[in-house]
Amino acid sequence: MTESQRPSGEYPMYPSYGNGDAAYPPPPAHQAAQPISTSPGTTVWPGSGGAGHSGGDHYGGFGQGLPQPAPQPSGHGRRARRPVALLAAVAVAAAVVGGITATAVGQFAGTGSSGTDSGSVVSGTTVSQSSTGTVAGVAKAVSPTIVEIGATSTAGESTGSGVIITSGGEIITNNHVIAGASSIKVTLSTGRTYTAKVVGTDADKDLALIDLEGASGLKTATLGDSSGIKVGDQVVAIGSPEGLTGTVTSGIVSALNRDVTVAKDSEGGQEQGQQGGGSDWPFEFGGRQFNGDTGNSTTTYKAIQTDASLNPGNSGGALINMNGEIIGINSAMYSASSSGGSSSSGAGSVGLGFAIPVNTLKADLDTLRDGNSS
Image 1 (tube, rainbow, N blue to C red):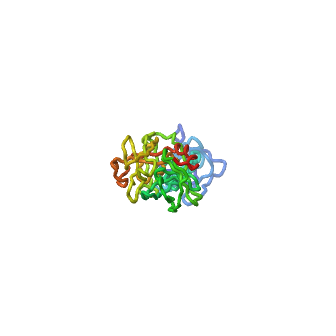
Image 2 (cartoon, one colour):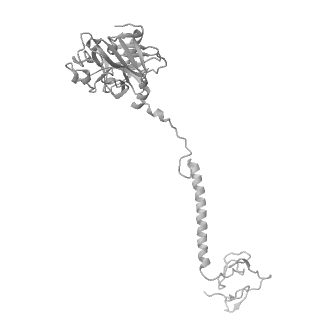
Image 3 (cartoon, rainbow, N blue to C red):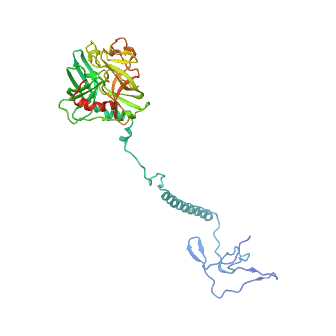
């Protein structure tokens, strides 16, 4: 294709059809439109039309005879920049449209542009409640209600545990912990000590109720229901084995309704002797005697069996379910190594401990408060 050499403002020559002679269309009735200069290097022709002519060598079909755009400067610089500018404009437009679309979708879905689910509501719970049902949670809640009991008798000194059941200082323990004691000293989990007196005892059930002198505002334990416990239930034991106050152990209920035989009084020995002489912890199981001679006066009761570690000094302490409720009063342990009369200091837990069901205690509590002793 060749370029037209016509001067600016003239009309192109169109080929005639049929005779081969060149011909010009009739001149317009008005003055030819002049180009309008807008910016350096750009020329715009006024008016409108459809497809224009290119080079003046053929008809354009629509807008025939209208002024054509002025020829553009040669070279590739402007033609190269226009596509780049167009692409940049398209990219900016796409980014704007994309951002608007993402925002709209995020608002519809309840999420922000960062992808964080900030529009939804999440149910939560406080961290402290997560300790419910754990050994740590039970220990924290119940430990302040467990005390250490030191009893002095003619046989020596013995150590056991007890459970606070009233804010005024009523404490439940085993009868064999305080039997024959001339004085009783109780130490709280805070380290404060009180003198206690015996209110009532039931040697047949190996239970005793003592009362602290001058105590008030104490934290109390919650007595649960032992009828609902099952083999396999998780439990926690708290007491003062070997004088180690506030010791926590855990395990499961390994059996129910075990027949356990223990001494009724101190003639067969007390919980943990410190000065020797009749200090073995009495316990009889399956017709065999452990932790020393149980003496001639014994009693047998139905007990909860647990594999939570119990040692001398745990007697009178609490067996607790995972809701923090007292379900038993720890009373005895099985220790084969102590058969034949060896001292309790050489005995240790072998995973067979026994506790008096708390329902037995609740049924006997009024009798104990009345001061009856048996």
